[in-house]
Image (cartoon, rainbow, N blue to C red; front, side):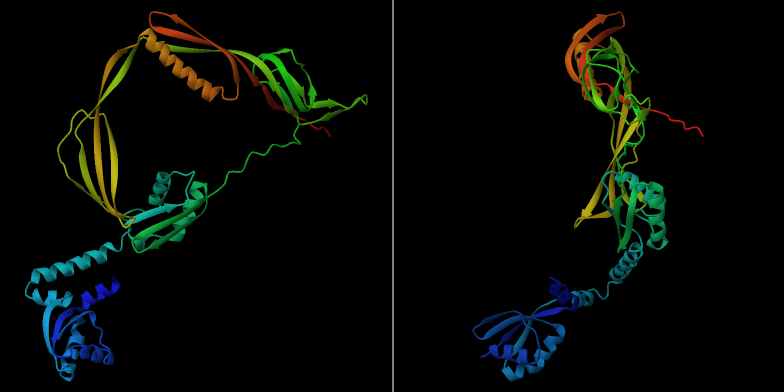
Length: 393
């Protein structure tokens, strides 16, 4: 492929050699270091391609092979220039094109970010823009070292980053900092208290002195396991970090209210508009005005060439209009809505609980349907309560 491009830039000639022994021309070409491209031989004739300079050499040595040479085709950049030598506008356009390419090569055309998992790519793009790295930024105005340092300090979630500008592309490599797991200080004394009211069904105390037994009813905030342990009959005590699981049967209520009449926003889509963005310049494709717009949504489609984002984006503007209207809810609809909300509460609020019983009842009023869910669950109600020890001198 590269050889074909170079041959086109230098210009080449397709010629025809006619004579009794055209194969002699191949031997002479090898001796004179002339490359014959795509040679095709027939009886008394040879067709091939050579560069312009090599064709001139062939013309000098053809007499040794007793052959006649005839040009069948001239191709390549030099011949195009020669044919269009009188078209000054084409030459000026080519020069202008070269100047534009040279100017545009001084800008950032695309940015590729790698290594981010927990950090949003949009947050990184915003931080990069604040530090002068964005599509359309002048490369000579970018201080890579300063941008790397500021981004690492500002984010606090980036352990290391590298900004590499190659050509018109900026490659951002990120290594995120790892959150240190919470370390429980086993040497710090604490009690275990009840975080909910219930009846104890099972106790698994690993450290500490029990203050309750299986079958006892306990109230929220009541001490279950003490971190002050008596040492036999010595009359002294030892502070410990209480550990264990206290499982209790807990009864709770959840109330869901569904209004009979609600205000609802009806969203309707209006006309779309498009804008072409090139670097930092925007060119609207539609100047039509749109009325009664309550919200807009923008979708950006980037032009990709050889897996590289080009600095050309097509931005589509979606416009929406909102109108309020009353929505009335029947008892059946309210029951379904309440069931969905209760199911979500079970998933996100009671995911650690073992739900043994769930009873739902409904009460209707003039304004709403009230659903009451009675739960009976088994869960670990123990939570740590630090003991503040004050040492006197």
